[in-house]
Amino acid sequence: MTRAEISQRVVGILVKTFELDPADIRPESRLYEDLDLDSIDAVDMFVELHEITGRRIDPEVARKIRTVDDIVGLVESELASAGAAS
Amino acid sequence: MPKFLRILFTGSAFVAFFFTASVLGRLLLPIAVHWPGSPERRQARRQRLLLLSYRSFIGYMRALGLIHFARPALPADLPPGQPYLLIANHPSLIDVLVLTSLLPGLTSVAKASWFRSWLMRPLLEYAGYIPGADDRALPEASDGEAGEDRSPVLLRMVEHLRAGHPLLVFPEASRSHERSLRRFRRGAIEAAIRAGVPIVPAFISVVPPMLMKHQAWYDVPARGGRYTVEFFPVIATAGHNLDSRALARELRARYEQRHAQMLAERDALAAAGSRKALAG
Image 1 (cartoon, rainbow over the protein chains, first blue to last red):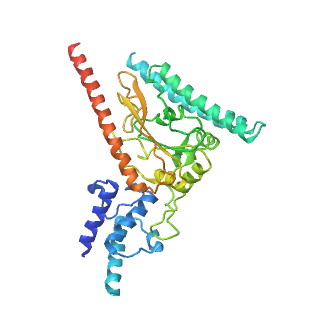
Image 2: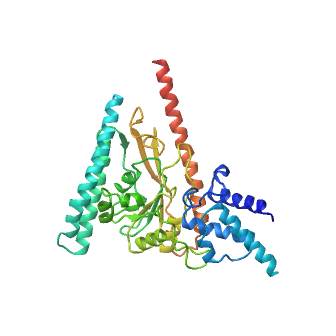
Image 3: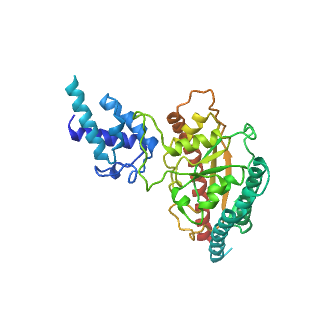
């Protein structure tokens, strides 16, 4: 998956799971402040991301996620390391 | 009633609210709580005082003709003295007062900014409200794996329910949009499931709309809003293996249906009003 495709899927997840307006979701949008997610939403989001990556996300890494771009970066590196492992 | 009078009365209700809130928080509740007596009696005094205050405020708004409200029949399957989670849609500013005036001992989750407010903090603390997520602080991420939630608000809600206190939460987390409900957060529903307490869904209807989120307080309707509260069937959680996500979705669908009906009533009333204006 290219970064653009990942980004599209991440936006798709955010729109579907949290009823957000796609127009509001920019790479620099902050999840909690700008998109108004709460911590239980973050749990749901990681469950959805698991569907793409197929890997369990390290809580240490999850904790550092702040923006939409961070999620895309995380999925990208997870996919890359999954590819390297297989 | 002329419009200027309606605005004046509405303003007086705001002043009455904040005045009563500070007297309660700084004088009456401390007395009720610290006056000698067994913990049960102190608790009973505190609850009576709060219930009286909520009812007086709603009574004040009714007496001024700002709202119309008849007390509904409470759900028959609500076990007395047992904790429960009350959820409701959030059409207007005074919904908390409407609901707490009906059910003794009910408290809610209040905005973190209200807990920081010099005026409101003593009342909220003495009355046993739960501070909501602090939007200024970064959310505390989970300590366990990435799929496990340890948010303090969730834990506080579970603790509150397990301690035997009823709790009111608006799953929309803020007042509804002008013509649609917000998405339902599942946090409170998850808390009720974890604590094993029943969920009592209430629908608040306000026709014509007033004190909505996007509306200025002085933008008053031509006549007082008619508030009605109705209850959907109580949902037992203990012993049922419920998924809070699915349940939140199900509830939201039920609320949407009822909400559409309310919008139709509002539109019919507005149309009748403009016909009358044209004819006159």
